[in-house]
Amino acid sequence: MSDLPFTFMLNMPGVIPSRIDNHIQRKLSALKGQFNDQQAFDKMLAEEDRLIYEVYEIKRPEVEGEMLMGVSIVHPGKVGREYFMTKGHFHSVLNTAEVYYCVRGEGYMVMETPDGETAVEALVAGKILYVPPCWAHRSVCTSRQDDLVTFFVYPANAGHDYGTIEQVGFRKMVLDSENGPEIVDNPRAK
Amino acid sequence: MSDLPFTFMLNMPGVIPSRIDNHIQRKLSALKGQFNDQQAFDKMLAEEDRLIYEVYEIKRPEVEGEMLMGVSIVHPGKVGREYFMTKGHFHSVLNTAEVYYCVRGEGYMVMETPDGETAVEALVAGKILYVPPCWAHRSVCTSRQDDLVTFFVYPANAGHDYGTIEQVGFRKMVLDSENGPEIVDNPRAK
Image (cartoon, rainbow over all chains, first blue to last red; front, side, top):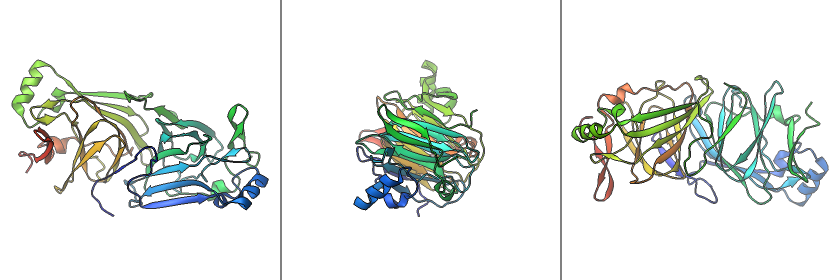
C-alpha cells in the first residue's frame, strides 16, 4: 500500500471508482432475517439469489488518523413492500462518525443509537449526510429504476459491528406505499 | 451543536453548502510571502486586496471519532505567473489524513512531507484525492474562468499548522506557461 497521495475518478453514470482494492457483493441470501416479510423473502430467494448491493472499497491501514473510503451501490427492488437495503451496522469503535455524499439515485439512510433514538434522512444526488458517532446506519434505495450511489468516508480504525443490528433489525423500515416511500416502525424491534 | 444526523446540499453550479457554520474569506493580503513574484504581489495588492479563496465549514466537536467537512472555493487568477492558491497547511496532529472530492473546476493539489517528499496531483470534477497522514497540502486553481471547488473531510482532532509552510512556501509551485500549467521548483524552498 503506497503512502503517496493518490486519486481516483467517480465517472458518471456508472460511478464505479477507477481504483478499487476490494469489491463486496451482497446477495439476498446474505440479508436473511433482515426483511420483514419472510414469506416474500423465501419466495424471491427460491427464484434467484439476487444481487442487492455492492461496495467498492479503497484500502488503507486501519489505524487512527487514516480514513477509509468507498462507493456503495444499492440496486432498486423490493422484498414484499420493503425496499432493497444494506445490512447496516454500528462501528466497532462506537464513537466514530461517517460522512456520506450521495452522487446518484434516491433513497434513505435509516439510523439509530444504542439507546433507541432513531433518524431517517432522505438522500438525493448532491446531498451530504453526517452520521454522528454512535449511530448505526443502513442505506435504502427507493427508486424503481436507478441505483442509490453514495461515496463514504470514515475513520480507518472504526471497524464494523453487524451483529447487534442483525438480531432484530433497525427500529424503522422503509416500505413502498400508494403515496411513495413510507417510514414505519419495525414490529420486531421493540 | 446537535448530535442528531444531519444533511446538507451542494447545489450546482454555485456549490455553496445549504448549511454553513463558518465562512472564511482569504484575501490577497493574507497570503503575503506565499507567492514567488513579490513585485507582482505588491502591484496587485496596491490595486485591490482581492478575494483569493473561501472555505465554508461545518462545525463538529474537535475530538477523535468526529470528522470535519466543508467546501473550499479557490477563485481563478494569477499573481505574476503563479495561480491563485490556498495558504496550505500541515495538520497539527501530523499523522491525520484528508479526503478531497473535486466537484467543479480544475487545478492541482500541491503536497509535501516534512522529509521533503513532494507530490502534485491534478484535480478535475469527479476526482477524489487521498492526502495520506503527514502530507501538507495546498490547492491551486488553474482555470482562467472557473472556481476550483472541492468538498473535504478530515478527522476532527487534526487541527491546522500553517506556520511551518509559511516560512518558505511549498517546494513545488504551479505557474502559467505557454503550454498550460507548469510545475516547477520553488527557488526559496531548498
